[in-house]
Image (cartoon, rainbow, N blue to C red; front, top):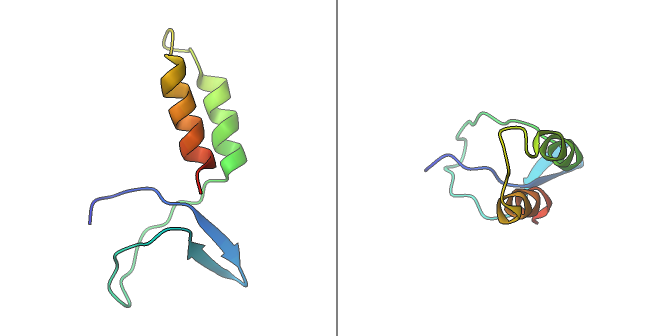
Length: 68
Protein backbone atom coordinates (compact mmCIF):
# COMPACT_ATOMS: atom_id res chain seq x y z
CA UNK A 1 0.00 0.00 0.00
CA UNK A 2 1.46 3.37 -0.93
CA UNK A 3 1.93 5.93 1.81
CA UNK A 4 -0.91 8.45 1.99
CA UNK A 5 -2.62 10.85 4.32
CA UNK A 6 -6.24 10.33 5.35
CA UNK A 7 -8.61 12.12 7.67
CA UNK A 8 -9.83 10.42 10.81
CA UNK A 9 -12.12 11.34 13.67
CA UNK A 10 -11.34 10.61 17.33
CA UNK A 11 -14.43 9.14 19.03
CA UNK A 12 -14.72 7.10 22.18
CA UNK A 13 -10.95 6.88 22.55
CA UNK A 14 -10.50 5.43 19.03
CA UNK A 15 -9.26 6.99 15.78
CA UNK A 16 -11.81 6.19 13.06
CA UNK A 17 -10.81 6.63 9.40
CA UNK A 18 -13.19 8.81 7.40
CA UNK A 19 -12.38 6.89 4.21
CA UNK A 20 -11.76 3.28 3.29
CA UNK A 21 -8.29 1.90 4.07
CA UNK A 22 -6.89 -1.40 2.78
CA UNK A 23 -5.22 -2.97 5.81
CA UNK A 24 -4.83 -6.48 7.17
CA UNK A 25 -6.36 -7.27 10.56
CA UNK A 26 -3.74 -6.57 13.25
CA UNK A 27 -1.44 -4.59 10.92
CA UNK A 28 0.54 -1.89 12.72
CA UNK A 29 1.05 1.61 11.32
CA UNK A 30 2.88 4.80 12.12
CA UNK A 31 0.31 7.56 12.65
CA UNK A 32 1.10 11.27 12.55
CA UNK A 33 -1.49 13.48 14.24
CA UNK A 34 -2.07 16.86 12.59
CA UNK A 35 -5.03 19.07 13.45
CA UNK A 36 -6.77 20.66 10.46
CA UNK A 37 -6.53 24.13 12.02
CA UNK A 38 -2.77 23.69 12.49
CA UNK A 39 -2.40 22.74 8.79
CA UNK A 40 -4.38 25.82 7.71
CA UNK A 41 -2.25 28.06 9.94
CA UNK A 42 0.99 26.59 8.55
CA UNK A 43 -0.17 26.99 4.94
CA UNK A 44 -1.09 30.62 5.59
CA UNK A 45 2.29 31.27 7.25
CA UNK A 46 4.33 29.65 4.46
CA UNK A 47 2.33 31.00 1.54
CA UNK A 48 4.68 32.83 -0.83
CA UNK A 49 7.92 32.33 1.15
CA UNK A 50 9.69 30.69 -1.81
CA UNK A 51 8.17 33.10 -4.30
CA UNK A 52 4.74 33.40 -5.84
CA UNK A 53 2.48 30.43 -5.28
CA UNK A 54 -0.28 29.75 -7.79
CA UNK A 55 -3.73 30.23 -6.24
CA UNK A 56 -4.74 26.78 -7.51
CA UNK A 57 -1.94 25.12 -5.51
CA UNK A 58 -2.88 26.95 -2.32
CA UNK A 59 -6.57 26.13 -2.84
CA UNK A 60 -5.73 22.45 -3.42
CA UNK A 61 -3.68 22.31 -0.19
CA UNK A 62 -6.49 23.95 1.78
CA UNK A 63 -9.06 21.62 0.20
CA UNK A 64 -6.94 18.63 1.27
CA UNK A 65 -6.84 19.98 4.83
CA UNK A 66 -10.61 20.51 4.87
CA UNK A 67 -11.68 17.42 2.88
CA UNK A 68 -13.78 14.88 4.53
